[in-house]
Image (tube, rainbow, N blue to C red; front, top):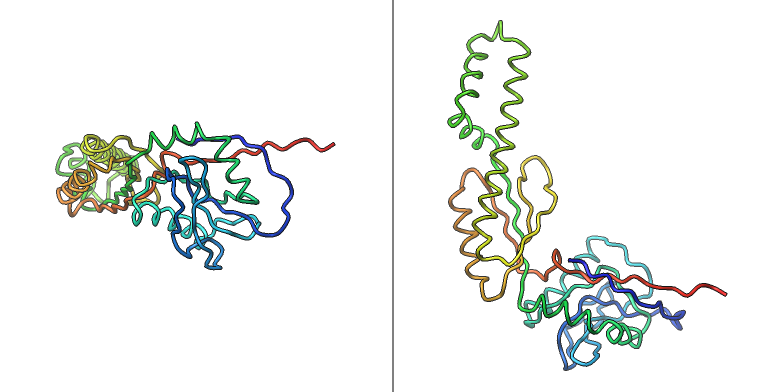
Length: 270
């Protein structure tokens, strides 16, 4: 889910330094996560607090941050350090969230405390894993030909009458092959989702990239079931070895399941 929180835009900056926010965590004591802040200046990443909530922030130039590879990786790296190295469950802020002062950041935590607490409770002790599945088209096609009698018959007919085979027959074969491949891809994806459902709390399907990818998914998994989920992914990957290639990543903060996005309300000019 994406949580949109409306807040009032603060006043004009008094200087060119702002506070970049990476995520929100449940934490009552001040923490420092190292000199890993965005912008390449080696700024400390630390916490700004309100009650039992903390924003993980760094000082940063007060500007619009373009989602370049370097900036995006820095944003992600901070969240990973907070989660993996320090054991928190971070709720990510959308990329480029910047306040003018620490006081504005605290005001944000104060104004949105109940909503943030609700999101943190829902995401507590949950991790995200990514799974991209590519296939070896030729290996899968060979399997389809073994299973599909009509496809085998039409292909043999065309190959035995190359001089007289019609354009229509070739078109029919092409359509049969593409439909069979699409059906096979759907079947593989359903099987994978069904088998991982037991160990996952939720899943999200993302857009596939390129001709070889048939699945691009994110899974939300409880920390207590991480090992079970890992074992299941590797078991499925081994079963389909030679036909499907699994790219399994994580654990990540729950980027695909919750992101805090701010919507600023600005007062009308007088």
